[in-house]
Length: 380
Image 1 (cartoon, rainbow, N blue to C red):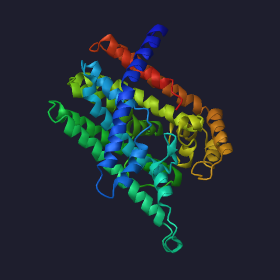
Image 2: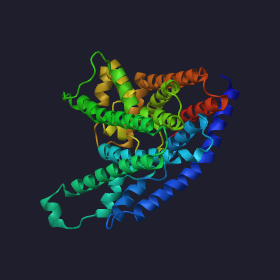
Image 3: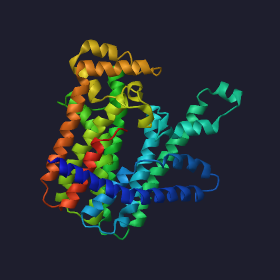
Image 4: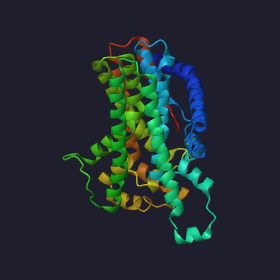
């Protein structure tokens, strides 16, 4: 693959992103405003907590949906906008729950929804707090979970209403539901697997037989990230236009490789990135005992280093100095190099398989290649 091809493809994707991102941002802003204004009486304030998060994102999933529709001959790209918005709303909805589970404080450079609600609700009644010390936690958690559910169904409703006359609607909804179910399965694994590792406690959760630790982490990454971040949006755009299953299947494999590389990259950034650039808490993965290729490599290869690493994992009072030591452990043991090499392998395999496709024109392949290259270069 020549440098010129990569340069031109990246430029093609950035141009597509620049042409569609502003329009989607305007539409998501209008959706947020309408959602608050049209909320049932007394519920507008609660809805504003959700719309607080549902803005400021990179809109990559939405643009991917536009792109999937376009590369299959959809000249009227705006027709796919409600699919794009549905995916962005879905993303915000699951982030509400994800941040709650991970105890995240910042997202997209601002307070997470549960933190925002906590500040807004600020109970001052000392008697209430004394008699029910967990009342604020229960209140905030309950409202946050409910708002996440509302977001999920608003996203789904947008698909059904907009595309009710599209002949591909049934297949679209099937693919959409499959994406959601796999993402939720990944979310379950993302909670249970760290718990099992941290407390050495077996739970009634069946890990597939004959699967090693690296395969387990790969499966986790595919389920919790790849299906809804890279594969789902592009494939849904293609399905909306009516692309045959044999074509979407081949593109799906490419995008799953891309999504796996993306998650590994995310794990690396979660440890090594500049927090101000990242827009969320660096070190949060350590606090939450997240199971990544970095951690798993140490676990499988260096018992002494693992003992030290476990002094930091699960520690809610972790300091910047502690994070720096975790960074050193990963580099000293070879875990960092292993993760980087695996990330590069999957990015490169995705690009190689993309170039073998014969059912997309050169522009279509260039846009997908440009997207893969765009992800490779990201810093947050």
